[in-house]
Length: 334
Length: 274
Image (cartoon, rainbow over the protein chains, first blue to last red):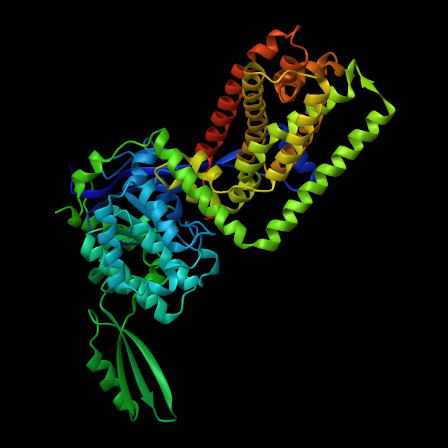
């Protein structure tokens, strides 16, 4: 047995897309002669995820995140490359793979709409053949983590979005899967519900050593949960490293905010590897009075935004090379 | 924790029967709680059947027989086809939602459980409306049965039950295949509606169709197997054609083929829009 929950090696997924011609005449022509082009949704991704890790899988819309998740869960077959999930090839053994994974997919509830949550749980217990003891232990754990009373006897149809998401996450962890895929679990939720959900995920990961693959656009999720971040864009992996490395990714940036007379805040982004903060402040003091000073760390959000916008993509590519020289395992493998 | 996984039992027929019963009971319970919906849809179904029967009745007021089949024999085929339709309408009704699930991307949720996708999808809905039709069909069949003076023996009863199962299998197979077209084409709703309309021809003896239509309705869209071929066994016991005798086998074959076609589509599914 390997120590990895997921191993991907040079995974490529291509889709054939019909080039549609314009207008009615074009549609008629499409009926007879078809002109396909190949779109690469996932381009040569290799990643190894050890057991028990919470990985943030990020990327702008349409970057290929969902496609990757679908390949990991066995819904899609990769065009090239290998995927091993819990020692299984997901596409070849979809049902077997499904035993050991849990999935929460955005706002699509996977529970039975017309059933009270407790009945859904009992059905899942039967479907996953969960032994009584394990089921009771899990329910006890859930009771200790969240207030189940308001949702247990409600049907999914009657639930608020927050309650539904909560239920879906509980359902995904119920059979104690080795990996749980969470696709935007906090989308559309209020601040307190988000905090609750994050706390729950963190606690379940800690207690059950469940590997969690989290895709999200909410950097709050990333900050609260992820030990490691993988970013893809246009199907290519552009970043893979620890959370700590992320902030120093573009150098050690900090934002210096100075309040000047007339109640104006002036912001300066400072790369501390090049200039130091004090010299900037004294520079300003020569010009005039400074009323107030604030020094802010660059937020995860800003860093991710920069990466998405493709700043220093060339540089980042070489950085990945530097961190993981070709053909050698990445630091997480150790 | 890990070794318990390997000793868990396999999912066989008993497993699926157990899950199915549980889902059905739960679904039925929740349906009953929406009382108005339940009453209106049942009433609508009865009305549909009454209207359908009226046109049949008026037809026979004017033509005492069709191609050598008299009123009571036709009534027999009518009732027979209604009963044969019940399993499709009660148990396989979710096929009608398949294309919406596929188009919206919701179908993906059926791919994440360690059970058969077809079973999981189909088991989700139990439609009680079909039961009114069943009652109507039984009344018609019993009425024509007694008027035709067909003996009630163990043999005829066993034959009847076997033939009804066979006919249901054909009906289900046709709709499975029609629903599964949504995995390939966008406007699959029309295919389903068209196929569902065809079932209305099932209550007429296939001998009234000739040539190419007879071949189509026997082997391509096998509606002749829904009432005609099975009906012959009981109505014309002296001249049972080979196709009638083979119909149970054909029924299983067609059902299996439609299942394979459905599953082929499901494997092809790539979860658009998520």
